Image (cartoon, rainbow, N blue to C red; front, side, top):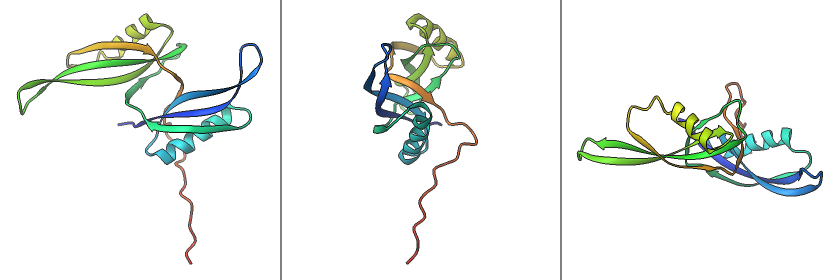
Length: 155
């Protein structure tokens, strides 16, 4: 199972009027630790940002799964309530799960989410869909180098 981290970075960006302005943007990436998340976001930002940048925050995200699509301008955060049965107590149990899906508008996000959840065999309810503040998502790709721990010389 993937562990998603939300990373915030502050840097100068050229706006639509051609002026430079300071922005703080959020990115999502999967990593095994905070250290790896920091190393990966720095690596990604080096290719995207001209000039200096600062990673201002890294935190574990509640996102369970990400559904990227080739076409989609925004990332939407979708909240799903799953209904399961607790076999030990014989009671219905509701589980809230968060997904991120790429789409152009809310209706498109809803259609894509329902299509993406067609594999679920338990009943679910989509309780909310909202535009996320996530600018881009960086999933782990096989072959990526893991961060190397510094070697401390023995005395």
